[in-house]
Every structure is written in C-alpha cells, then in structure tokens.
Length: 170
Image (cartoon, rainbow, N blue to C red):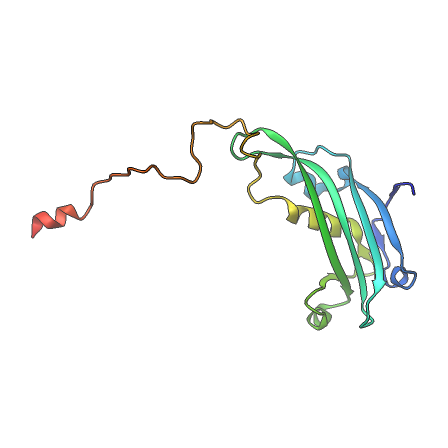
C-alpha cells in the first residue's frame, strides 16, 4: 500500500459506516503550531486512523501518529532528534452537552460547521502534547558539563543557623 497524503477534514459518520482505515501522512510544514515549538527536522507525520462504530453505537476514530522532530536540550542548548509517537481514541460530538454523555475512555472532538473533523489539527494537538515538558538528551549523550551534579545536594551543607541570634538575646 502506498503512503498517501491524508485529507485535512473528513466526515466521521460516513467514514465509520464504511469502516474506513486512513493510512498516510501530513506534511510537517502544514503543522504550524507544532513547528512553533520544535526546530523542524522531519518532513512527514505518519498517521493511521481507523473509523468504526462501537458496541454502544458511538462513532469512534482511533489511531496512531509518528513524527521525528528536533528539540533543544535544556541542559546543553544543543539540538537533538526526538521521535514522537502517540495513540488516540476520539468520538465526535456536536455540542458541549454531548461531551458529558461520552464514556470516559473516549476523548471528545467537536465537529465543525460542515459536520467534519479536522484530522490535521487533531494529530497536531496529540503530537504537541507528546513533547516532553523539559526536553533533554540522555545524560550520556549530553554535552553539558560532566562534573556538575543534577538533583543531588552535597553531603556537607553547613549554613549558619539564623536563629542563633535569638539565643544571644535570651
């Protein structure tokens, strides 16, 4: 099967009736919000989305996405490559009231004015959430100063007690 460019929006109801499986890619250049928080790197985001109807009759779209992006290490300020892989499971809703009726194992995605889901935005949101809060190399790959310690205090930490002055006043 060849890797095709995916549509930006799609009707989840028609797709679920046909049990559609979309496998393809989005160009990374089209994901502006993701590019704003990364340093670019890869060309494509590989995506596979399956549309289905569950046993409760709810329309579902589930899948996975994978992209390779470049991030800045917060220890050494050098760029490094990070593979982002996400899995998701959504159910389309028309309004806020319908969100409350969804089972907890589905995330809600609102339909646009045409009754479609924006797949590109959905995948972009998931990838942004997959970016580490503090991106950094593995410690052995990092160029940060090797003699510095991270998260450890020295064994002997002697500071004068600020309350010693009160003892003298007694």
